[in-house]
Image (tube, rainbow, N blue to C red; front, side, top):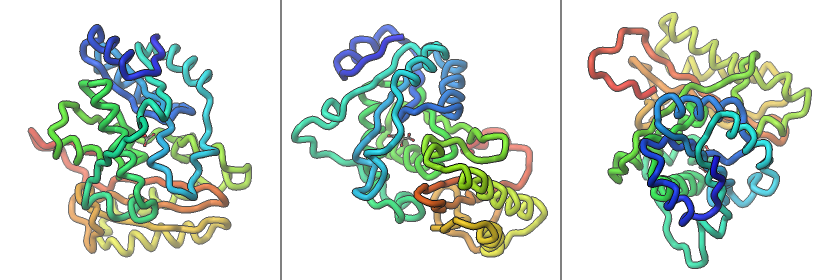
Length: 289
Ligand code: PAF
């Protein structure tokens, strides 16, 4: 496994790697990241993983300084998965003096995480575009856990004709339903015990949807009420939105993205489920989610 820190080194290594799958990460890897690496391994000739805690996607009062890091452990895990290349640049390598560009994806970045975290998606889109240009992957792998991020990246790739196929893989969860996240280490024992409430609430709403409930507000309220029954949560939003535009729905048709963000102590958690009428996909129907 090659561990490279500069763009020039990656460019030199890229030629020999053929069909390359890229898993962009901010490190402190967990089973969710590793499942993306395994999927890339199965679908591509070679796998590259980037480890870069991207400063431009953190707001001034967010957790950039305390974001968990353990490079030695990450490299051992990736070696165990048989990744061919790890790109672990410095901030100065990605954002050299005088750097002045920013990719703004309009519309889908406005609600939800975009409203709660101004500038976040410009930081994500810009660094992901740079990673695509540097690594030149055939496919890039992202988790459904960050559903809005996936929508933003698909939009950017489509609008800017980037020659990369975006693959979005299912959220990996703990046995009790908590979505894996590097930030889960912030939770203390009491918070960790109640954290699965979020997925339980989303699952309850999904069950009601599957039972015929189509009133989006009723579904939002079920989730809010279940979370309110547990101590310690401060809900930021519960959304039932069109999965492509992320506009809030009044009535759910065949598909919706139900997502939420809540604070639990000092930790901000997000999660989502896809509401979809069960039907056999028609030939040629895109499987976006
Ligand atoms: O999902 C993440 O870990 C980050 O947002 C990403 C895609 C690696 C960009 O910094």
